[in-house]
Structures are given as structure tokens and as C-alpha cells.
Length: 391
Image (tube, rainbow, N blue to C red; front, side, top):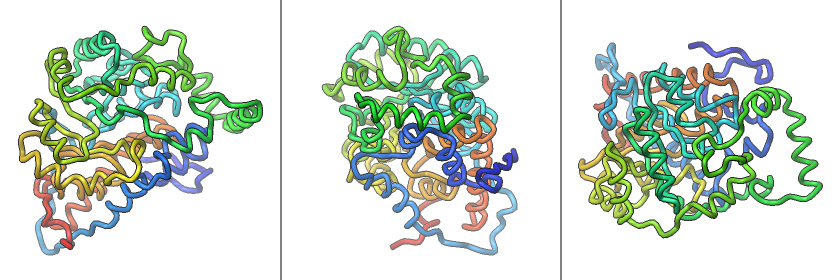
């Protein structure tokens, strides 16, 4: 898939970074900052990238790499490459029916799309648009009956993997969102500034504000039938996110979900071991993209100890700071089975919809192929710590 040249950027997008810049120009500031920002002073957000960049490959030569395989199996699903589109809340605010566009691109690329509880497009809308059922991401809510209904809906639509997010007992403080007035009352000057920001982004107004309706949480219409986005989000979170959840609650999840369960938000090796003991089929090493507790380990730094603690009893996935096929290779070398990408597809869908998401996946695929070839490997399954320069 070839990208369209974008005159505002002055070139045809060639990387996730290019799509980030296009998204910055095309989205109102409050929405771009929502995608791009992290918690507090964004120390962990930066560490996610810096720690990946600090890893160095061993370049190997004179090996037959004429045929290279990227395919893998994650939780019994065949993937054309070890990449999964992570759940992203509010994505339908970035482009018209963005979750549907991203799911189509993922299906075309032979990878999995994960539908967020807080998606604009409903499970039914996304599943009806693709031939490959999405995975479903769930928060543990105080209203257990509503969560049970969501799980039943996802299962009936063909979803067989539940991604249970466990690092949102409370919501991290995100200074960018606070400055932009997301989820909080703003004065007259704030409303005027926000209105001017929206007016300056005519493409977004046409594509999303007017053309992307309904702009409500598609999976939560029974709970929030008149919701506007994102004004009602903080109120709903305060009322439904459950800080009393413990490991014992996984028994409740298992009782209502007959398929595979992946716990997302694991950073500590002891938690990883507890997750497996509680019956998780996979753990996702994640700090929520640096959006929860600032000052914690990056995903790539936490990964090796989690892999060691799990000891092959469950699959280990990772997200956080992954921006290229090179990053994916580094994570696989340290024991991840695959990587989830959130911001890369969010930037892309904001910049150019389904076509841009498809191109992003194609770029990352080729980056991974090149990385394999220049490290002397012919299959992603061969990636190990030996592919990296050891300290």
C-alpha cells in the first residue's frame, strides 16, 4: 500500500513520526494532546521511547536471509506479523468511525484489532465491518451486570480473547488534558479558545464533528444514552471504575468469559506470576503508554523480569513506545510474543484514515523484515537476547 503525498507535510509519509506530525496538524489541540500526552510530567512516556532507542542490535553478515518469515501465533490466532492494534479509547473522535477504519486495515494486514470499552464505534459496528472478529478490551466496572453484558455481546460477535485492563484502579493525572479542560468545567475564555481551535480545523469538523456522528460511546449507550464525548467521561469513570478490584475478581471474569484472557497493565514480576496463577492466558507488559503512574519502568525495561517470572506458563506481550518494526524486534528479542501498538494507529487514522493505518502496518512490516535480514535471522521466532548487544 502506497501513501498519498501530503502537501502540508511536504512529502509522502514514510514513518509513524510522519503520521504523528500530520495528526498534530489536522486535529484540534485537545484531541492531539489526548493521544500524544502522558501522566504528570511525562517521565515514563519519554522513557518508553528512550529505553527502546538505547538498545543496540548485533549486525550479522554472510548468512542466508533470502527468505524471512514474520508470521506468528498469539493466543491461538495466526498473525501475519507480531503486531496487534491496541485498544484506544475515543478513537472515533480522531477520524470518522475510526475504529471501523482501523479494524479494516488490521484485517487486511492479517493482524488483530482490539476494540476498547470506550470506543466510539460499538462492538456490533466494528465486528460487522470485518471478517475477523476483534478482541475486546474490558475495564472492571462497579456495575458488574453491565460488564457481564459487554462480555456476552463480545462473545456473541465472535470475539474469543478478552483484554482485561488492570492498571486503572484510579486514573492518572494528565496535565495536558487538564490544561485543555478535558473532563473539567472551563470558563468563558476557555470555551472561546476551544471554539477557535475547532474552527481552525475545518477538515476535522467536516470529517468527524459533522460526518462522524453519533459521537457517543458505542459500547455504553445503555448506561450513557445521551452522552457527549468527552464531557461525560470523567463522570462515568468516577462512578464506574472500581478501585476495590483484587485478584479474587478474576474468578468472576472467568465465570463470564469462556475464552482466552490477557491481563493488560502488568509491570511487576510478582504481579505477572500472580496473573498466571490466577489463570491468565497472557500478560501484557504495559504502563498504559505512560498515561497512568509517572516514574515507573518503561515496558521494555520491565519485560525481561516479567518473562522470567512467567516461565513460559503464559504468553507475554508488550506495549509502550513501540514506533517501528525495529522496536518490535527488540521486544521479541527480550521475550515478548508480540507488540501492541496504540499511538501509531491513532496518529495514522487521524492523518489519513484506513489507508494510512494500512500503510503504517506495511511500513512496520518492512522495517521488521529488514531488521531480521541485517541481524542475520530468517524468522521472528529466532529473535533472542543474542540479537542485541549485551551491556
